[in-house]
Length: 335
Image (cartoon, rainbow, N blue to C red; front, side, top):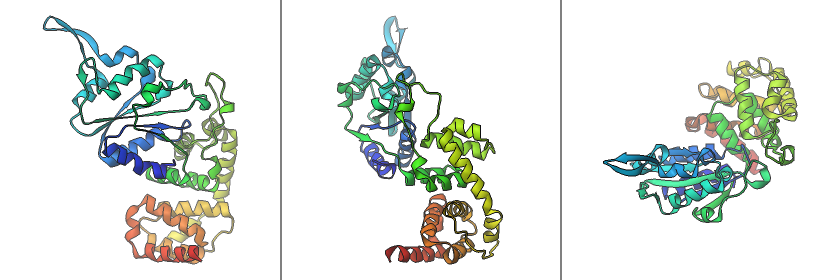
């Protein structure tokens, strides 16, 4: 299930307090998607990392209260007991946790209490894990624990979902343009490049590692070796080559924003870059940009521009120029 479909499904599951488990390759945005769904559903979020837990952590800490020995809830358990508003408890990296820790979670998730300590009715449980074949240190999830989740959803990488996320999180326009141009590099995870113990000193192209490239680019660090350390040599070679092509744009974006009508480049890679760049700057000068795009840019790229511009600035869709350009693009697509 790609993230475009997954997000509304997760929101519905969360609102109806139905427990779920996400399964997918490393670094594809499972946790980020849950965070977004939780925020849009209006829920609080508690993230648990059982891989660093001991089986006895969930029963609390021993103490003497009024001359009686008992276990007092601490940390996450206390938060789960005291939750007074809709809350999602997201158990991340569940498959990397030891079987003993997984077993200690079974009563917590099904019976909603442990050692007599009851979990608030406001809490919904969810989890995420990688797969065994990913060589990410996953040995499996205990079957009695799996059955405590109402559904298990396989998560897939989604280009449009990543682009929407990148626009919302102010990733560089040139990176977004590159991923649109070379969508096959958004996620190119090869488990065979990872050792049998799950160790690897080479990063591979994935939504998470491209985020790192975006942060490096925003910081002005575009050294080939640094980019290769973030996303691997193949991805770095393609990305740095793409950045070199972008330089061919020169002052073209500035000319367009100034209301001039220069000719449109013919090279597809340059068009991808220009479309993403103009979408980023279109909030305050959309009418000017839309006029140039409608007259000069191939309409298939104009369609990408509209999608990115609306994702970056949702209010743009209310402008007359947006509607006019949309009609023109839709007329081209329907032909």
